[in-house]
Amino acid sequence: MQAITRAPSPPTTTLGYALFATRWLQAPLYFGLVAAQGVYVYKFFNELWTLILRCVTGAATETYVMLAVLKLVDVVMIANLLIMVIVGGYETFVSRIGLQGHRDQPEWLSHVNSNVLKVKLATAIVGISSVHLLQMFVDVHHTARHSLLWGTVIHMAFIVSAAILAYMSGPMAAQAERGRHEEHRDVPEPVRPLAPIPAQAGPPAVETGAEERIRAAGFPARKALEDFDAEHPRVFDWEAVARLGKTDFVTAHANAVFVGPPGTGKTHLAVGLGVRACQAGHRVLFDTAAGWAARLAGAQAAGRLTEELGALDARALLIVDEVGYVPFDADTSRLFFRLVAHRYERGSLIVTSDRPLDRWDEVFGGPSAAAMVDRLAHHAEIVRLEGDSYRTRRATSEWAG
Image (cartoon, rainbow, N blue to C red; front, side, top):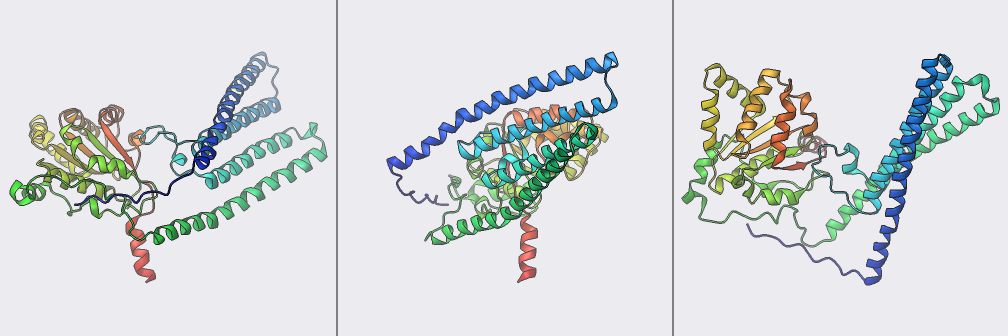
């Protein structure tokens, strides 16, 4: 496959670069908000210590405890608002934060933009206002009537503002999406993001036995990386897939993990990489997580689990598809741990899952999930995909047509 180069971007003037560089003037502002976050941490523990002392000495009434707890909740919600502004605002307006693949990456950060950030901030402010209003009504005997009235009016104004922002975000996002499509339509020769993935060098597949290895791999269907619709997922790191497409990770005994909702193309990418590995001379074996569980359980029941794991060493790459769709008990989880631990720095794994690695304790019972994730992720390229199901979209399009 011949690599397709990107069209050169239009030159940017020196003045344009200078204006764009002024975004870094905002960086100290976000670090100032970090200091404000520290102030709220101090305020939280100061209030908590006062509450504990008054409870121990018996000086705390039920109303005081309720108000003090609401005050602590208020501090936490404001701190949440701060971290959303700090991280989301810095990512949106200053510079990207390289958290792709991090096990603690916030769910909302991958698709945050100025429009989404405004809606999230508005809803957070409504929550904080709700706590303040609740404090007024709890301490109603010590709150002036006009304060209750204006507190309610202000709270309703926050709710209406948040509702308007949420309503407007839909048309604004749709307009931005149409604008992107218009730009793509004006380009005479659109470039597919996966085009830079290099083709395998060497003799034709027939001469190297690649077809035999592909048939022996047990793929559910033959898929090619270059046929993947990279425009479909909203979040997709095609550069990571391009690196994996060279199949160097198989030689290095490293792993690849594809995480995303159903229908975003995880299996397609896994099979495409498996085909590439076969064409590069590696032996591959594909199965679903349920299939691997049955295979390992059968070997253990026959008293030959160690021999089975040793026999799998002949396969340079194992593909475990659909992790997360079926939960496993503690015994099956231990079998998967044995597989991952045996392959660690000895052979490669490709895993597809509908949930990130830090939530695998929801899939694998028992204490082995954390140790399994630790070994799997140590030498792994983690690719996250987000978007609607390709199958659902296609079925909807056919029905509408």
